[in-house]
Image 1 (cartoon, rainbow, N blue to C red):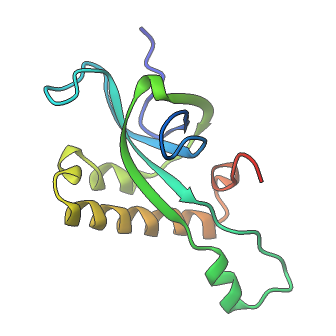
Image 2 (spheres, rainbow, N blue to C red; image 1 turned 135 degrees about the horizontal axis):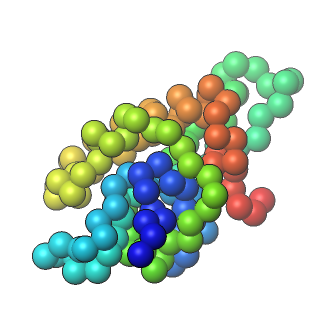
Amino acid sequence: MVKVYKPGKVAIVLQGRQAGKKVVVIKQVDDGTKERPYPHAIVAGIERYPRKVTKRMGAKKLERRKKVKPFIKVVNYSHLFPTRYSVELDGLKGILSAESFKEPTQREDSKKQVKKLLEDRYSNGKNKWFFQALRF
């Protein structure tokens, strides 16, 4: 079987609360684990995308509109739709793991680090497609 969900691959969530949102695969588990016997992936995605900015806006308004609200999740492969895009986020590999989901404080810390990385990526102008909603 071909490995479609490699780390860094962009996918779209098909079911659940974040349906229609874009995610980056951080880690794939093809065989499953004791808690989750099905093949799944640990993903980080954007719950609320940054808003549109124009040249006329001031610096303060630009900063407010560049905010990103991330989410982290463990998703079954059957609930993901792979795309042709990929994102190189080296910092995310060390941040997220199975232990990140054990306690709410660890989860919040991981989300804060993901938010910082995604906002830096957006402000540098890289991966523009990833930071746009599928439908406006």
